[in-house]
Length: 401
Ligand code: ADP
Ligand code: ASP
Ligand code: MG
Image (cartoon, rainbow, N blue to C red; front, side, top):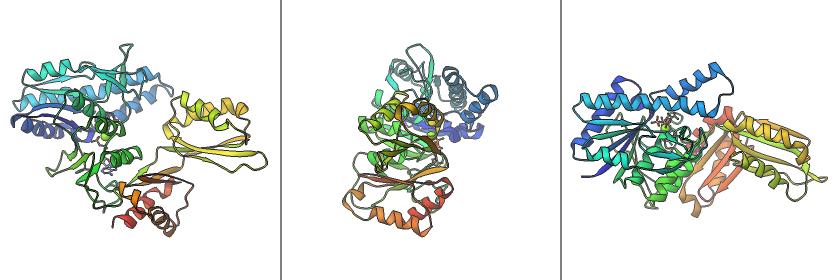
């Protein structure tokens, strides 16, 4: 007998038939003699719809009330799934994130899990029943509901797997596993049988939303057995693990992220401490700066260009506008019609020519590169958003096909 955590995303529980489909997968796992904890997301587009509803009321909602609102989506799913399991003759109980013991920090809308007090889940499991937990939510030290950021249910599932020392954590979704690119963008994308935590972490952080990057981080840290698998087709999925036989593919995947804005501060003085001033202010606002480019100083001044998540565009603009006099710059430029396209693969550490193959593919399709950044196992470029899908396909063709 094993302890298995199974997480089902929004499309997997979108309607009545999908909920019964999930209930059957869970029932089979339970009847095979396993302890099962299930984590579910809100149904279909519920979270987006709730964001839309808030937008009908105000353009500047309180973050606390926003989390209160968004957490309701998952509460619907857990109750419906527990009912469906009951209909199939499987005893089940639903728990919200706070009933399940998720304690988070205070950051509404992108809270981090501080700890999981898992006694309640364990007590309910001991009663020989399936425990269905709402993903994406917890409680902060003010006893207020928080949410974990978009895609956060994956992290809830992995956190439960860690706390309960589960034998396996399965992330069920609407594709058959992790592919070499988003199969909805690249029809020829190939399913990977295996991928390393490091490669998956890069892909997830660079826009492949099939797994949330924090969930991968957590799974890597605690060595969770992680599998991405389809809730619709019963075929083997993708195993994510520490080390994969190094033989094989140079590039594991191509990812696209359109949640990017490029800022430039023009004409700042070419003196020490400038970058510190700018980026420490952004860090205080918890804005995650990604690629940074500094022009060569000329006539005593230079330009600072960097990317931030598009979600943080208005906060970034506010910080820069309020402080432009302190920086001594003579203008701020922002471009949000951009995308970041990246190739990821541990194999590139010991192989030269990956960058030139990537740049050649872009050149052949007449795609202009605005910024470049590299690490040991990835290369990212910032290009026009309109070129993003063309670029993903061109790069995928160059490496994978
Ligand atoms: P869920 O609702 O199950 O959490 P998500 O929409 O968050 O599902 O993630 C699944 C989606 O991720 C897929 O439908 C697919 O379009 C997208 N995706 C992006 N990149 C990849 C990739 N490399 N491999 C598989 N799916 C990917
Ligand atoms: N429902 C949340 C979202 O749409 C959390 C999740 O699906 O993981 O982002
Ligand atoms: Mg998801």
